[in-house]
Image (cartoon, rainbow, N blue to C red; front, top):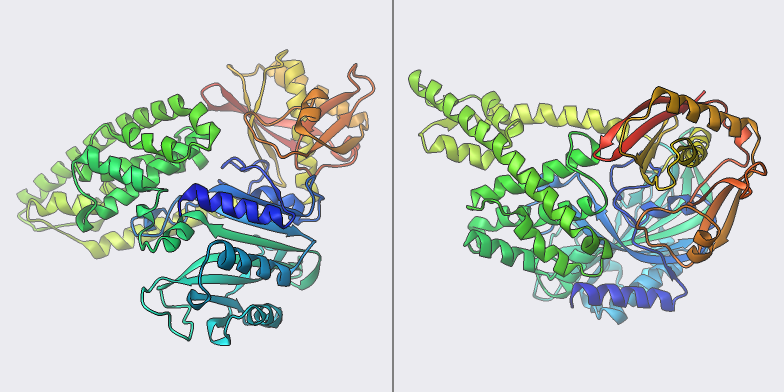
Length: 591
């Protein structure tokens, strides 16, 4: 089975069960400060998990492109990836755990033909906050799963993503990949059992007092990795041999003139993974930089270049990217952005090569200094500087010094790396502290203020072609990126503040309607640039009888928003700056 076949079967199955397909959303989350990237299929539907009605109803499904950055250093083995696709289906207060488990098993057993004797599951063992999930276990046994193949685990629990919010037990599905007959007793620690899906049962809400209450709207969230599922269905122990990666690996072999053997596998996997992830991140409008998504992109490209050099490749990133466009022909955005993607990859590779050359010069200086002192060991601090500042992978550092018969102090290097990782975790904590998309009153107000700002920019700057290029909203402030070629003047910033506060004081009503995307655009609604929309969308309108068209702002948006602008308080632009070429950034607060 190939990638497209799996996706088509999955969507067809869940549509036959009354689910509506929702579009594959951008990797850059809209109006969510809690994560840099879309990390799971449920991410774009967070408002609907929090009781907001979805225009397409209570049963949804899709395949979602995702980026997870926590495993970047783990990439290189058979299964870890930065970019992956996730199969997802949801019940928003409709069916619950019994039907969810039955649907998942039917898809795995009847549609994918996974034999029952190679199937096992885990369920929640219970703790002081929530009871043992006997209901899920009973459903599994009713489907013919032996009790020996059901493992009760303490950690079968999801969420909340932050300190409060929806959460609940989960039940995971495993496939036996050991070749010979699967053992009668399921051991979840045996790596020959590979997880291929997870039904999260959101039946609780954790409140501010750390109490777990039964949720008013109980949800189901299924997630299953495309790459991993294809690998196990094709009896492959290496995801890089599936059709999601094989063409990229073949291209690396061709360019490097080396084979995908044990000696080269790690480097080739890292290159394949990182180039693919970079292609998708660039396609969604990100440029390499030293902060946030741009920093992750830069790190991925540079890590790919480092490992490319180790297997003899030079000026290769755009060549290795070519097969990504062939594998993922179903993503229109890749085709549309191809020229820009290849240009950015080439420029960043060239820029990094100059940094590497400086690193080589620094390494030579250290070697010369060590040899003059007649010592045979280099300090871990010097190695870490080469690793962190000049982009040398530790293998490259070891190779460089080994050729001069100089040992490296690996223990000292590990200590330096550990210190750096702790600092990185501390620095990124703020990015994730809000947890699942923050829907506090403050955030909702700022979200509405962002709509006012979007409309006001077009008026004050006398430019109807201004487009939003992303936003990031926390309870403290909003950040709004938009297309514009120059810095705003002090007078323009003052005009924006005056206009927006005028509309806030006017007590304008905010209404939500559901309609088709065609109807939305015909009615004058603004939308996300290049986005795909479902057959029905939510449109938020800030009504204004003083305007000729009858409204001040009208946008396709998932929400939520205030009911009236008078709830917002006083709007103030705190900063206006460049985000990247042709993109300006405004930071604003409500006082």
